[in-house]
Length: 310
Ligand code: SAM
Image (cartoon, rainbow, N blue to C red; front, side, top):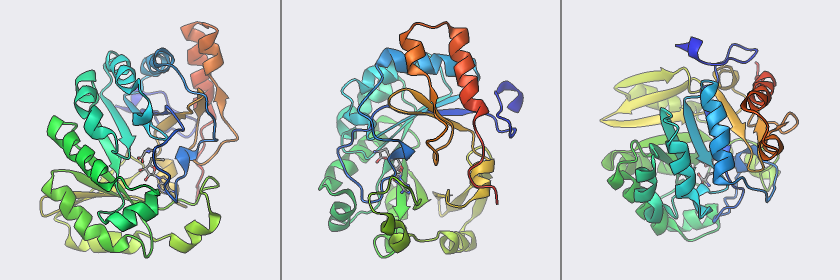
């Protein structure tokens, strides 16, 4: 299977491309790492995003994920998905806070979107307001239920766990997900230079090790997802929980199969670094040949190295 993929110097196949299509967001989460992006207002057109995906497809990439900012604040989001949809990837997904999902879910599904991840850290309105600095809990929940209804399967809920804020809500969130046929992803808070307040990570960081031990005790089955950064999946009473622990986790890096693109069209070899970006968009805007664009992609892949090694 791995033979079909381009591999980096560390034998990691490049299976997925995560494109941050905007830095704009309609929420302002207290912990947000902005997908590791340097702030910039530039955005790519749907045709430019399509071109990038076309080159990626040629190099063996199987999955596209759109992220932000919030990808749904782009008014041309359906057109973007439609263009990518014409390339027949195995999987096209999108990560959103869900606030605008009720409006777009059906059109996105029809445009070729396979599934969505929706960030929802809490079911409590006050906590939601504290975390996101907005009062959109009802809109987010309506968007999530609409995504389930139109079949953006599986809907995954991304829950970043924070000490004394929402760690006590894991069970309620699991039940909400199980009742609506969704998968819960628990995410360990990442320290990031982009976090608004560096102290935040120190104050609110909550290790998921103990949570994983507890899940392992009660799970009916446990699976490890090799090509998804080695993350574990726990099956409990007909529900599913995945645990994502990127921080100081050499396994996370060793199993990373993801290349990223910034909103202003640079290849980003690592979530946690911005000192090795590779310029791409100006070559597309200059109508360079596909061979030249492939060469630039390969340069980006060549710069990939694990951030955590021990
Ligand atoms: N606006 C969209 C959303 O809310 O899902 C997409 C962008 S957001 C940066 C992508 C994912 O990164 C979300 O699931 C969010 O919870 C997660 N995230 C952001 N900052 C994080 C941090 N410091 N630690 C762990 N996960 C984080």
